[in-house]
Amino acid sequence: MTTTERIARILVWCTAGATVLFLMTPLFVAVAVSFGSSAVFTLPAPSWSLRWYEALGRSRELWSVVGTSVQIAFLSTLIALVLGTLAAIGLLRGEFRARESIVTFLVSPLMLPGLVVGIAMLEAYRAAGLTNVWTSLLVAHVVITLPYVVRTVYASLALFDFTLIDAARTLGLSYPRAVAKVLVPSLAPAFVTSGMFAFLASMDNYPISIFFTDAWTKTLPIQMLQMVEESPDPTIAAVSTLLILLAAAVLVIGDRMVGLRRMADL
Image (cartoon, rainbow, N blue to C red; front, side):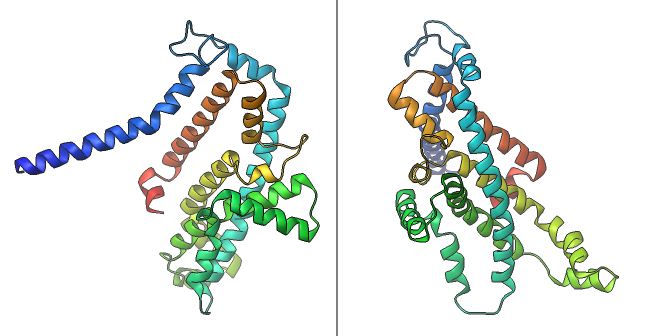
């Protein structure tokens, strides 16, 4: 390795390290503030305390919002897994033109600004006469989570050999059992990966959810925004820390079940 190559490698690693530090610093600050005893955002903290986590445990309103967010995220992820898998199979196995255009359309919510999608869906709901807040949130979050499933399952299906299903049928299995025994296990990593990211995307969504909430039905990000506006204290940092732990737990579970390298390949 020449001197120039060594210098280039050092510069690359230094740039990568500085980028990671820049991106992770707000997370470290939020975690540190959540363990401080001060009633305002202060670093370094005068002393360390769990008072803000204890405040979370006593907040019935906050836990009600968390329950709503978890319900919406779980149901939207489940619906997206079913619809996205069927759509991916139809797109891959069907014989029609503009297949790639349809795939791009299905994943387009990931490419468009959330506010644009939210305004468009608000107008669509108004035209359709959909006024129920909970149902509106659920449908909106299905739109949010569907692209993760379609993109991941479609890529996984492209690598699957469908003649294996025919081989299973020649051994006496019915078509549904052949799909359950052969196709589903092969797609399990795609289901796990897309389901985890879809769940996190739903739990963390703000720009679309804000159009479909009211005073009685809110998601966690909307409640956190309200807390910042009305009573900004380190309770918000405690909630943020728990969300960081949730994301870390999802990554650990994904690593155990699928593997981070395989998740990245999907």
